[in-house]
Image (cartoon, rainbow, N blue to C red):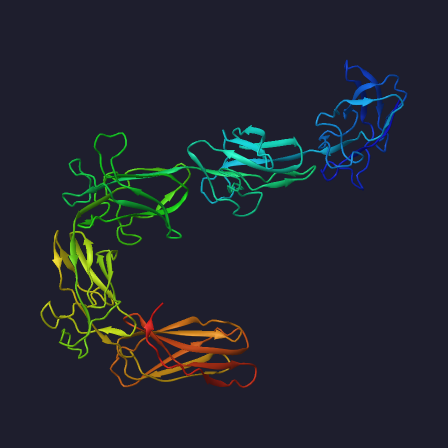
Length: 600
């Protein structure tokens, strides 16, 4: 009875089959054990080719083999997958403990297919951290997060292979596991959420993308001997924002105990960078109180910059913000990001912002009409047409928009939801329009655009609770060019370029911007500014500008942007001036017709 020529190889690719190029392993102890009593019958050690043999087995029976790596330097190795494939001469017969099943050996029988494959174990880790600023990247001062349960899960079976709970350093490691397909799952404390995944460098970002369920990473194939220390999880402690929306009975912008909350209003948390809605809450009774109404809450917010927008009740208007000395009682409706919005709100991990309130009071309303004043007499005459698409804004004394509208096909607008106070109205017409002469008749039929606070604005209007001021109108005229371009020339005198331009009568002109680009540049850029002539009624105006900043040879292109007092502008033609060591030639190109547009 003989058992001989047993191959023993190290498996490099982890597939459980002897492949070409996978050598034998020496110094492995192999024991032949009697299945009936557990006694060791024989013992051998593999040679440098991984071979071992037992011969002269005296008694037929059932035996198993035990392979022992303790005599080798393979400290991070174990036994590969058993009984893979259909050819017993090339698979491994030992289980993960290095033990085969019982083998019946008959008298004189030779068995030479009992093999064992060695595989190097894989290792994966690394870090769970508190992403304080919520950017998805491990930053200085952001510490490890303790108490996070981390699981290593085999993809094919979905079985949990290992579990680890992070300590104060936030680190974890799974080692000495079989190669294969795995993913990692993290279970956070209840007041934490995962940050954004795969933002940047794999050594410093978070890998929790939910590919295999909540709190999981994508599947990764772990090769034999692979040590992956890039599997990280960033988490932030939920920030909380809450407050009350109340009816401001005395219109002072300060909450009083006798003033009631307003239920059923939608409140929006908006990312200040992208202007996208992050969360929505609805006002209602405050939890834990018998009858405190108007409460809203955003219970788990990521670090970042936000503002809050409140739906305005139809018959109310926003009270003025920060009218008292106690922020917990003030309204936060600053209109900083548009009507009925709050100021900027910056949150970090774990921030708690309460009493972020909004007060509303009985509203006033402003309207009415924008028309094309064809005869430019400043009055609404029969047959003069309404103008659609004009933006109209109610502005408070600090220039903040508190209400806005756009004229319809009938030229009518309504500025709704304005609180008691002093305001002016601003009309933003299309670029082809100017404004007619204001205050030429009764308030019902004239134009109120006086330009008191800049182009398109009215004088201050004082509003009281419940007012319906339906006579703030704007008459438009088709705009004329603010100047007449006569000529624009230039020349290089060996030291600098001398530019000159001539205009005719100037109407409402404010200043000129000299723009230049070199032939190697794509875009024009401003290089100087000249203010308009003090005597705009003169029949001709002469302007000059010297450009000394000429570091490159070649062709320089110049143009003049003229800006009027309404913020509109026109361009001159473009001229080209060549600079070289020889005579320099002026060339006029692109004779642009002037076009009046809004200044950008």
